[in-house]
Amino acid sequence: MAALRPRPGLGAIVRSTVFAALVVLITPPYALASWLVLPLPPHARYRIVTSWSHVVIALARTVCGIRYRVRGCVPQGGPYIVLANHQSAWETFAFQVLLPPQALVLKHGLLWIPFFGWGLATLSPITVKRAAPGQTLRRLLEQGTDRIRQGFWIVIFPEGTRVPPGERATFHGGGAWLACRTNVAVVPIAHNAGELWPKNSFIKYPGTITVSIGAPIACDDIEADALNRDVAAWIEREMARITGSAASRS
Image (cartoon, rainbow, N blue to C red; front, side):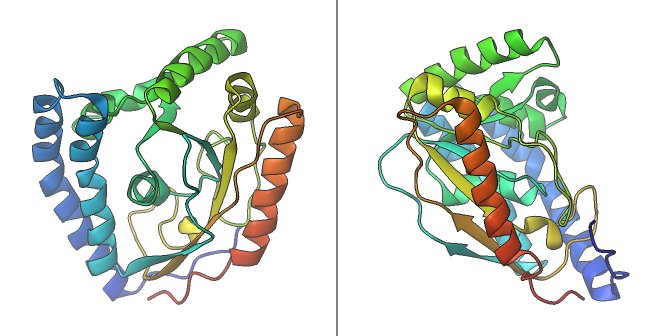
């Protein structure tokens, strides 16, 4: 069960308000710019549009005091399929800073969010809708294969939704299934971002997030279900090591 958070102090409230105001201020111009660069090749467009995420992570550090440290290293080569736990909005931005160009698997409805979703739509995401599992997997395979062919990594959050620290959710097998069907190795990632940037919370807390990056797991001679269990077990072990390490809050 997730631990109860202490009542935020005035400093956290002020910093979070300033951060939110700055993000609201910079997002519309970036959304416009993302459509202006739409004719560019996908990788060039990605580099330009994701500079917004670099700014957001920089603002989180300088305004809110949210820093991060990395255990392990980003593997060379690829592309790979990243399977990670999902606690916060932070990792969706930070992975664009930490990892090579990537295609995020997300719900189609997110593309309709004003400004943010419009920019997101230009990043070649893999979109899935609430539909029959077979149809969803076909879309995942078709779009995933295309993005891998273009040299993009694939980022998937198998839990399907943000899960607060200390809680557990089922790891859905679509990402492992895609890895086995495309014979692309999986890179597991664990983090504790939800301790400082909680789900559905306006308040951001200062501290240091730990991001743990595992070695690539090959898909040779392994079934998708077994691969999914191995990834889930690795992430759970890492979460046991790093949970509660995000430093003090104020």
